[in-house]
Amino acid sequence: MGSEPLWEYDHGGADLKHAGLERVLREEGAALNALAGRLDERFDQAVDWILACGGRVVTCGVGKSGHIGQKTAATFASTGTPSFFLHAAEAVHGDLGMVTDRDIVLALTYSGETDEIVRLFPSFREIGAKTILMTGRTGSSAAREADLVLDVSVEKEACPNNLAPTTSTTAMIAACDAVAVAVMEARNFGAEDFARFHPAGALGKRLLLRVADVMRSGDELPLVDRSLSVLDLMKVVTRSGAGCACVTNENQELVGFISDGDLRRWFVNSAQPLEGSAGDLMNQTKAIIEPSLLAIEALEVFQNYPVKIGEMPVVENGRVVGLLVLKDLLRSGIV
Image 1: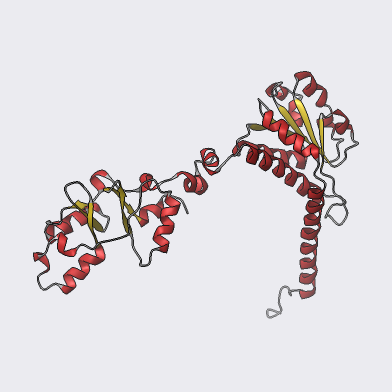
Image 2: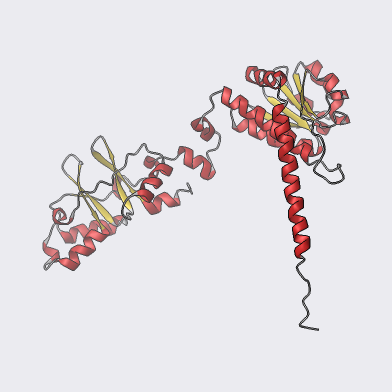
């Protein structure tokens, strides 16, 4: 009894599941291809309206269309178009006060008959806001009320009963993304603009953080003269915690670099290691970097350097202004 398996893996069932997964993805992909082939001047007009909008894009929906509306408002807002989501059920209880005559309302209802949406159009019209409807039924009640109607209809749902919103929601969210990205491109909204709205997290740091923000400088910067004794050099390196030292002249120009490996090799190979100076140990490193370089690009410099290194002098106009330490870079949150 104890040796009997509690369950057995049904390979035939697994094949059926795999076939079902593949079917859904292929059907939804085919629906998106069909939608792309039906794009017309109404989608272009929607983009033009949003570009010319002096207010916000107000997305509005309930249920699954409401979830798409929330995501779409966030996409617009993060790509340079002020936007917020208005829950259709809450709108008639005071939230309509958030809508102005300078706004454009992007209403989402696949059936076009969602009561909470349909009953809002007279209010939007009275306020003076333009309305764009995204729907699967261009002859619906909502379509007759909207100023502009975008057709996102699909032949059928991926649901085997043709009931659960699956393919239709995929088409709607893809169409929303297409409009938002078209507006973004028309605004010439670039990586630096994107970073301004995404300052937190790895994404924002990759787009914003520069070497100057991560490098060690001031009292943390281990600068030494080439005449400094080996003993004093070790004290400087130890105090800095950087594991290296930059050898500079009186103008703070880089004349050499001493790594922890240089120090160890000196003590192993020198007959009288304490008799030397920084000038005896230093190497003519080519591994230098500019403070204006993006931190993520600096990480690539470390990764692509011919030999493994952990530090690089930061040089600007010939002068050493900082020290970039690999472990500091990794702690900065860019990866």
